Amino acid sequence: MKIDRIDAQILNELQQDARLKTTELAERVCLSATPCTRRLKQLEDAGMIDRYVTLLDQEKAGFPVNAYISLTLEPKSEATFRRFEQQIATFDEVMECHLMSGSHDFMLRVVAASLSDFEKFLQKKLIKIEGLRDVQSSFSLRRLIHKTALPVKATM
Image (spheres, rainbow, N blue to C red):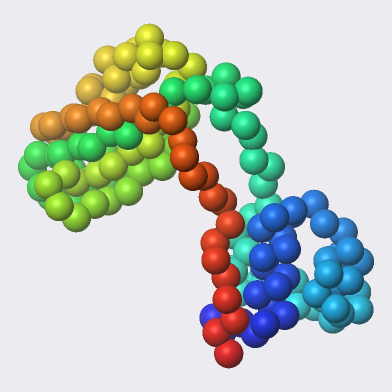
């Protein structure tokens, strides 16, 4: 989807504060409320805006542990990958799952309240998935950068 300067401004403002009232948003992007509402609806209908969420502080919410897990599956088949994707989607601890290029098939970001809870996740859930051949975990010691806003620019 091509977006102009005003659409980019709308998206950038909402990425910083999704609770903005339409009148405040319109003022920030130098529009009146009606055209701003119309543009917002077009962005939503086009799927540019996926959803509106509240971001929690991960540590204050009780999940200070961030683990990154590289996984390899065997056999390498569409059915094996599909089964894995269906199972991994049921685990609340899994925040992200990416199909990867390179030496591993998938990369997960998992959160836990403690290392003990992470171990329970690993032993009672993850390694029970059929087809897992290799699992390598790394832990984040400290988050240096955490962005949620995409660097949206006008494309017109």
